[in-house]
Length: 298
Image (cartoon, rainbow, N blue to C red):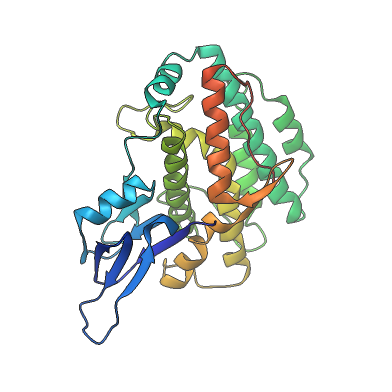
C-alpha cells in the first residue's frame, strides 16, 4: 500500500480516536475528517496554529510516520522520528558504529556513482550531451578522491535549466532554489524515516560529518535521489509557472515526491518504498552480508 503524505497549511486540531487521525477545524461549519494512522507515511505541519495531541504523536511514531514541522515561512525545519527501528536495532547500531573506513569509502563511491548516473539521465532526457557525465560516473574511485561529484555538479547545474534561465545552485540563491530547498527537505525526511525503519542511526554518516547535523547519514543516502526532485522542479520551470514564491500549488507538486515511481533493475516502486529498500541494503552492508547499496536508476 502506498503511504499518504498529509500537509496542513491552515489552523487545525489533530487528535486520535480508534487509531484514526481526527482532523478538526476552528471553523464550526467545517466537518471533521478521519484518516487511518497506518495509511500515513509523512505528515507536514506548515501553519503555526496547529494543535496536535501527544496521543497522535505516539501513534504516528509507532507506525513510523515522519512528522515534519515548518517555520513561519513554511520551510521544513524540524523532523520527529521513532527511536525504535526494530528488534535488532542495538546490533545494527553496533555494526554501523564499527564500520571500517574502507567500507565507508566504498559505499560513498557507489553513492556518488549512482548520483552522477541519475543526473546524467536527467540531462540526457533534456537533450544535453552527457558523455562526460557517464564517464565520470564509471570512474568514481573509493571515497571519490578525484571529486567527480563536484565536477558533475558544476556541469549539471550549468545545463539543467539553461533553456529558461542562467542558474546558480545555492540554498540562499534565487528561485528556483526555493523549490529545490523545499523538495530536498522533504526527501531528507523520507530518507531519515527509511534509515530509522532499517534500524540505523541517521546521525552517523558514511561521508558527511558535522557535529551540529543530526542527519548526516540521511544527507549521504539521499544523494542519488536528488535528481527526482530536480525533475519535478524542472517541469515547473518548463511549464512557465510563477516560481518566485513557494505557493500552495507548487508545494502540492513537490509533495508528490513520495509517490514518484522509481525503477531498480528488477522492480519499480513508489519512491517512499524504494528508499526503504535502499536503507535495508545499507544495513546489510554494515552487517557484512552485502557489499552493494541498492540504488534506483532514472
